[in-house]
Image (tube, rainbow, N blue to C red; front, side):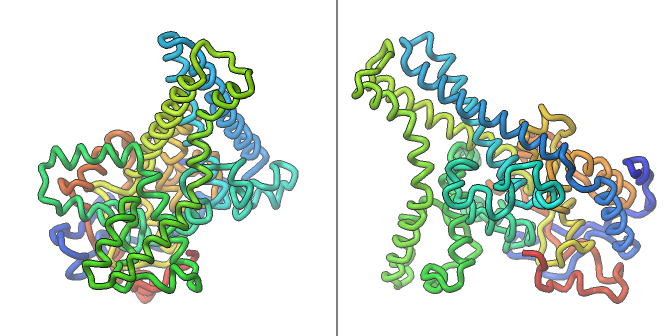
Length: 473
């Protein structure tokens, strides 16, 4: 059996990384630049990573039990939080504050768990092989293409993002075009407008609070829906995408006003109707979540109308408190998710690329390390708090593993990176969030290169860095 010591000791202690320049702020690399030198052995690196993955082994019934444990925790937090919310709304002002605060935190934490841990790993197919090898270990809906699809969205994972849209945006585009311009989650690209604005830096940093507390609604939901619409080549939205619009630019909720104005500015007033149609469709996709956030305010009103209201406050006061608490819970969930997600691939020490690469090639696996940051990890308390997004390097290497498999895989990958002189970033999420802020406002820039491995390192196998079509997307 392999462990971290199997890969200990750098095989290339004398080799210094030849880092690509980061001087060109306008556009991608103006000349071919590579990070590693010709002495790097890509074939051996891939072989070591494959051996490490094989050493982790297949998902077992232990993984199934662990998933059910995580689901139970999320359900207790979600339903327990709503019970506390209703109780707190019914009590006199003062003694109810602790209950309402606890309710908001519990609901927020549960919502983040349902997305970042449960929905994330199931939707990547992390439990598909387990369903095949141990068919009775889990309920059948814990499978990619089934979980949270259709009516199951209301039971499995209800959030601002439509699960099908998130699958296109995240599972395909983000994972297989990591830190390229085609990556819809490339922070530096998505914040180009803010970076270029002639505003005081203090104001730019302050503006980030808007995204921290609302980003799933204001950015991630409409942008994932855009990716879904464009992926349906025969749909009206895909066929009628405005010619002046850049498909890789993010779509945010404020574009409901900005894009029609730009259509008129570009002399294409009819294109304004395109954006009205787009946001009308998107509104239907987020309607269930809107109802979910508003629903806690309805219960006191219904109980009051039925003559069953039990509170020391009026039903109208209770409804107001319930609505405010529910909104605060959603804002806290946004903030929690932002800190553990938005900074995963952004910072002045990480790389972005002007070429694509083949899935699971040496270049692909290396980009997972050079364009991702891990956080602290190793036990359920830490890993659940981080939404299991503290294993980003390993997750991007092989997206279809279970949470427990990543915990076993991580020390092996870290040792392999040390052995081969490969960068491996593991830092606190708050530090990484600050580094992400610096990139977003223009105080820092990501490092840029053509690719990580120079063609000379491959010998004749240079197709891995020629920008060939990405496999697996």
